[in-house]
Every structure is written in structure tokens, then in C-alpha cells.
Length: 543
Image 1: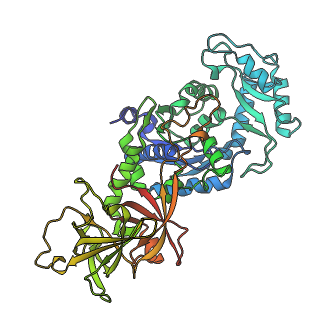
Image 2: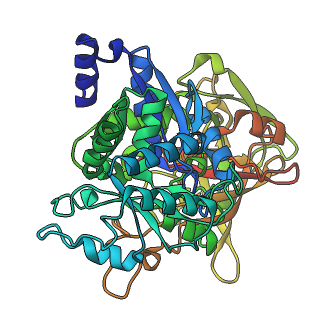
Image 3: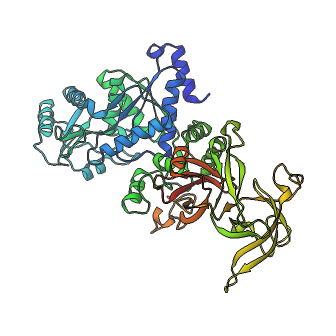
């Protein structure tokens, strides 16, 4: 049991909030969700499910300059894909009228004032945590003057940045957020839902707790960076005398070799360092989906990471492990050759074609089998042959036997090279008595390799992905460097390969997840066409 569950169970036992549990996931629609958000989604929806409660989806749409319906739609899609459904859908903009009335209430009670200072002057006046701030010269305006100015702000009389509404709290507080925080700013911008109705917009700290209160949220679960905001969250609820949810903070998810900043992810997209938000190298949920990660793998990852009170960095290999664990159970096996060299079986009949029985998934007997055509000429992986091999190399070499998976034992006799000395053909003989069911089928050899029939294999585009950054902490830059200096130039390699002929476009897009035997897990990309299938490498078979 984690500490959040302990808090909730104690509240239920004490009949707090009538023993109800109501959480929410409140993203700002200014970008696509990433793996860090997935942890928060799993936690908020998971707590609601565990305690027979409800979880709302609420869009924190208080900044019209950065927000868009594209992001709203993507967030909905990502949450559904992860396997969750919200009880109610809301927007902070639903509450703009009520928030405005509450702002006037605080002004009327002498707890808020209009400040004419610039942002630079306000920041300077706040001072530093070890010394008191300086009160604004406008702090002691009368209630009447503040109400008049605030209403004129709403009416659009003043330009952007000319005035703000601030809460009147404590300019000497060691918590900088308590030093007369800004509640409203002037912003003449069209909102994606309210249009041009408003030209003043509430700040996060004034909108968030009150939105929680309106919706009857019981446990406002958020990441640790909001811990210093909690006293302000509490102050607004208490000053307004409204329902007061409990804010609980947990450690955010940090992965090595990864950037989690929405601003930096947006920069990668805008400056074309990646191919959009759903680029499989991105840590976005849609990027992970396109790479081939499953909802179950991400949910299991979030559960494995757990809930902590201190920030730490998780190794991305744990996420990859969770993907392997799930895909091993579900992915359909197929044979593909990504770096081909031709293998010719000299004593195999020229025009003979056999259909070999291949297992679709040894972890799932109900997955059945498939037929794979076998012929005289095959493609094998170039790395599965060495002309001069040492004792530790067990695969194919001159005068050594290996088994062709699902087929026969072969023995290499010689190779053919081009003028540059590159091997173009590997020649072998086969033992026809070593096929499954034959007398010598159980003869032991030290290696089994995969293959694809030259006559029947289909060409495919294979996209091999590596980590987007070449260092564990891309944000930890030397002077005059940025995170962009740590981009991995080999994070995407595109090559052509050969796959089993059974993989039609219809089958590939229906099944989606495949294990290319001995190579890794791959995902059928939406770019696939009848003429050319495209596969993204999700993760290798082993760490």
C-alpha cells in the first residue's frame, strides 16, 4: 500500500467526504501527453477505480495563447487508449463566470487588489525567500477603486500587461507563492471554447483549487512541484469558504535519455528534429503507441515504478522490460531478414517449394500455426555467417551445421564474393532427413537461424529506433550547450528487409504487433501500403 492509499483509506474510515473518493486528471491542452502524464493518469483513475469512486477529466484551459482543440482531442484519445474512461468531462473555462464572481468577493473583503506595476516590477518586489518583499504602491487601494478597475479590466479597457489582479496575503512569507500572487492577467486572445467573451484570464493557482471545489473533488493528486502551491490552494478555498479538497503530492516520473518538458518537446516538433508529436522516438503517449508499446505495458510500468514522495530518475530500460513482458505474451511471431545475404542450398531441388509449419506464439497455444514457404534460395541475416569464426561463434560458417528454423539442418560448403571481396552468396547442402518428424530431426546442432524464401518474401521498410538522446541526462548541459546538442544522430535508421509473404497489409494492420523471430518486437506503422509494408522496431528481445 502506498502513502496515497493510506491517506484515502484513513479518510474513508473516518467518513470524510461521506467516505467518497472523487479524483481528477487536469491536463493543460497545450501539447500532447507524455509518459509522465501516463503515470498520473494511471494513479488518478486507478485510485478512483480501487475505491469505487469517480475520476473526472478536466482541461485546465486558462491560457488561450498556447491551447488548442487539437490537444484536447489528442488527450481524450490517449486516455481512452490507456484503458480509462472519465466520469465527467469539464473545462476550467466552464467556471470562468464563477471564478470572476469569487474574485470580486475577495476584492470586496479586502483580500485582492488591482496592481498597475509591470511584471518586472512585481517580480523584483517579491524579493527573495530569505528577505521580505516590498509591498506594491497600489496594495492599499480602496475596495471601490479595485472593483472599478477590475470590472474595466474585464470590459477590455486596458492593454495586455498593463494591470493584474493580486491576492493580498503576506509579502514577508518565506513561501514566495504567498507574496501577493497574481490571480488575473489581461490577455486579449481568442479562447478555443469561449471565443472573445473574456479578455482577462485566471492564473493556475486561482483556477485549480476552485475548479476542484466546484466538482466536489475529494483528493487532488498532483506532482511534487505543486507542493509549494498547496498553502495557496488551501488559502483560496478557506478565504472563499468553499468545499476544500485535500491536495496530495507525489514524485513526478523522470526517465533517463528522455526530455519531459512540454516546451522542449514542442521545440523538437516545431524545428523538425522529429517527425511530429507521434514520432516513435518521442516520449509522448501517441509516440509510444506508434512505436508499438501497448496500453498494458504502460500501465504495468506505472504500477512497477510505484508512488514515491521524492523525485528520482527511472531507467528507461524498465519501460522497455514492461513492453517485452506484455508483447511476449501477445505478439504474433514471423520471420524477417533485415540485413540479407543470399543462401543457396545446392542439393535442394530447383523448383521445389515446401510449406513449413511455424508457431504463431509459443506462449499462446490458441494462436495456432502458419505456413511459411521454403525453397532452394533463401535470405539469411548477414550477421549469422562468418567466413572465419572463432570458437565462441556458433552460427553458420564453413563446414559447420546449423538448423534453419522450422526446416532442415544445413552445412556450409563455400561462399561467392564480388570483386570488392564482399560475400554475395553462401552455398550449403541440406540433410533431408532432419525436417521435423524425420528420423534425424532431433540431431543436435549449436545454433538455429531464421530465413526467408527469396522467391516468396516481400520487401518491407524497417524503421529501427534508438534513444532520441545520446546521454542519460539531456538537460544537464555544459555552458553554451542545450539539450539539442545531445540528440542521437542514429536515433532512426531506415532500411529495407524481407518478410514472410503471409503478411498482407490487411493482416499487418489487424494484428499490428509482431515478434520478428530472433530480432525483436515490431509494430505495423500506419504509413504501410499494399506496395510496401512499414514496421517500427518497438524493443529488442533482450535488454
